Image 1: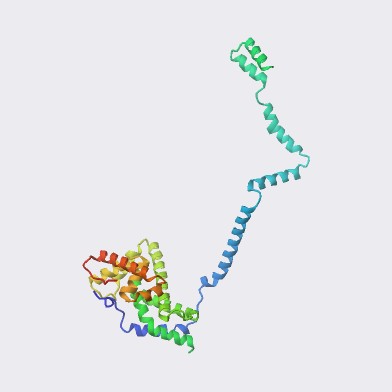
Image 2: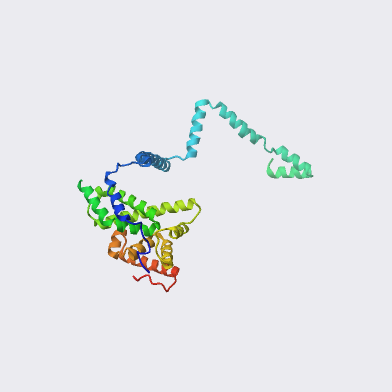
Length: 132
Length: 173
């Protein structure tokens, strides 16, 4: 099996090739748009990387988490908008204590037990035991 | 004519034919080999000011040729994928349709088997088997140890042998 004889070239190819290659230094240097934009793209990419890295470092080293930041911001807004705390107190009253008051009372429990068939004597006995 | 131009013309005179045959073994087609040789020499011309003479001129030229050929092969792999064909099938098609292929069926089978080798093994096989380059020189061109090159060549040989059938002699280490 031959090594080089299995592939050939057109007649006189290498003389022609050498001629063409020796003209390369005389050719004007062409710069493709990609190569022209490459330095600007590199600068933009470096800037982006710096911003992302800086952001990542700050996020890691900052003393408060995002949640705390949000809560601090909400508190700040609340203080600024409602310095006396009147609205916030209403808020707590409405969603907090009011709701507590809407829970089960001792009377509700007694009524439920009576409806469930427990005798008044038994109930009085339980009240005595519990100290009511 | 300045010194750089004179040196470039010497490189053209001395190495253009060798570079062509080297490239042709990779691309398996005369037209593409011709285009790629021009790209390689354009690269050599633009890189010539950075040639410090630390490496031998021959090693430096071959290193550029090998890198540019690998870049071409990678681009061709992408082009093949975009055409929904494999690079192996594309190389086989090139070997079969090359009007300047003058070998027999065994030569054709060998070219196809070499084209199917992984990148590194193909480099080593072509440099050693077709270009008959000594391992020490290959080591400088590919920046790989002689031991690793010998191992690569041995594996490549085994793969080519098994693709062709054991009875065909393709040289030894």
